[in-house]
Amino acid sequence: MAAKKRGTGRGTRGAKRSAGRGTRGAKKSARKSTAKRGTKRAAPGSGAPRSAQPATATQPRQARAIQRTTRQSPYKMRLVIDEIRGKDVNAALNYLAFSKKHAAKQIEKVLRSAVANAESHARADNEPLDVDTLFVKHAIVNEGPKLKRFTPAAMGRATPILKRTSHVEIVVAARQAEGVAR
Image 1 (tube, rainbow, N blue to C red):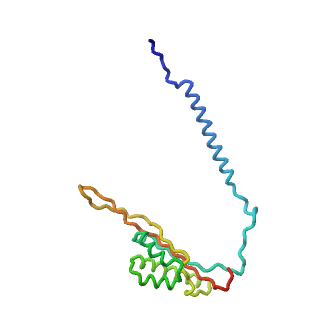
Image 2 (cartoon, helix red, strand yellow):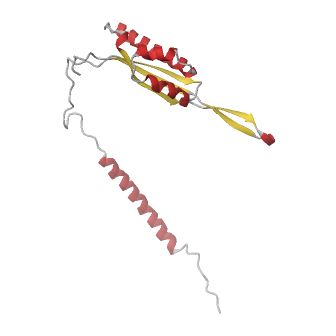
Image 3 (spheres, rainbow, N blue to C red):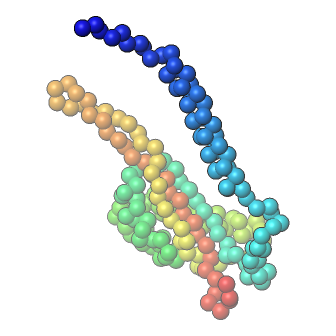
């Protein structure tokens, strides 16, 4: 039995491969260009006009305050901030002042800052602002950077500890009167 000598297959098959690769790349670039063409935006002057708000109705005054990298976990902070969302500022401050949670002190600082920012913006724009009409429009706690620490464990190992931090954002706005159309 004579053993057949096999070739490495690099002669003719290699040419086919390179030709195939070139066309595959062309297909991909063609797909990309059609995808770009499909997401073309309309010119600013064309299309349906945006619904303009009436000149008489003004947007309610808003102010925000942010505290970053608060040294408490977002989970614990959210327990408190969920209680004040949507409340009047006075009711929210009252709740935070008598809360036993540590997060309440941090959130109270941010809320007082947001109220002070609203007063400052109103004073700068020479507009009247009644602090009693303010309410907590938007209040969220996001996760901040984690501080990575290690503690000794059994048999010479080290166990990681993640000290979590939070970003607190509060937006206060003035409630509009019930009789005024929005």
